[in-house]
Length: 109
Image: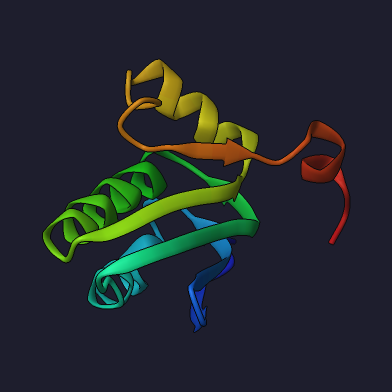
């Protein structure tokens, strides 16, 4: 069973936790897009446990919204599977993403 994602904003950081999968991302796509505003915003995915192509699609949606809002979006703490998908789909240059270290991504929460 997938963990429903949660989303919260603390200053210029958008914290995402849970799973970003086809079954779960619908719950936060629109909410995240609505939080885009002019200026820098860091999307912290360090509390994301699992992600698939739906999580990548969500990030693309958020980058489109950020561009329209003149928001400088940066993704940090991405799970390795999401960063790998971005590279495989040729999106690594479009979605600036910094993965967490392998030891960190395998650590139990």
